[in-house]
Structures are given as structure tokens and as C-alpha cells.
Image 1 (cartoon, rainbow, N blue to C red):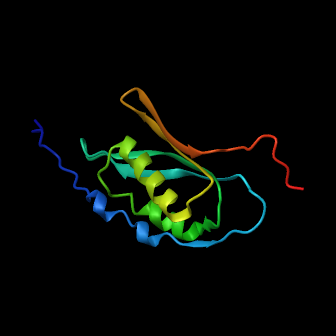
Image 2: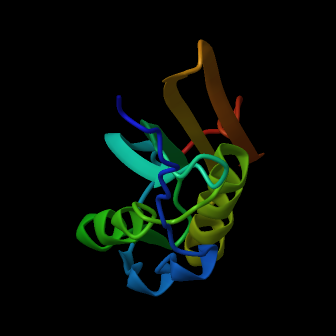
Length: 137
């Protein structure tokens, strides 16, 4: 008969997230609503050591800069082996992107795959998405 053995999955601390990978390029022009989305986001549940997979959406109106997408992908990949709960993931991405871009508007949403029968969506938003009544003439 098989004897059950405890399994241990190791993971990295939050300090392993590589926000230094993020790069920007100048943005000039009229305010533009931009959405970056991926269904390939993953990190690790620090309670179980099992992976958390989900969709990440970044909605923003740039001020002076946009994030360079290759650097953004490297940044997101740095979460892959980090043990961090879902809510702090959303806050960390929001904090890093806001510090990088100082946008007019930013919303970060994480939508995680169902785990244990529970769906989790986390969202943080700051700024004004639309300025009604404004004219660009």
C-alpha cells in the first residue's frame, strides 16, 4: 500500500518581483484609453505552494509615458515563482505601474481561475477615466 508523504513546493519571496525590468517610451498626443491584457498571468499561492493562474488587465490613460510591452512581459514573468496572495498581487502591479507611468487614469484588474469552487476578481482604480464635456478643439 502506498504511504502518503507530504509534498513541499518552494517559491520565491515578493522581493524577487523585477519591477526594474519595466521600461517606458514617451507618449505625445491626445488622451488615449489603452488596455493591455493577458490570460497568461501566474504566481504562486503562499499557503499551498500551488500556482495561481489568471487574466490580468491594465487600463490606463497615459500622461507622458507608455510602458514598453516586452519589458512589461518580462516584469509579469517575474511573478511566476513568487509566493504572493491574489489581493497583494493586484496592489503590487498597480503600485509599480502607477509609479512608472504617473498616468491620468489607471485600473488594474486580476481575474483568477476558479480555485476550490471560488472565483476571485481583484481591482484597483485611480484617476478620472473620461472627462465629459471637454473639447480638444
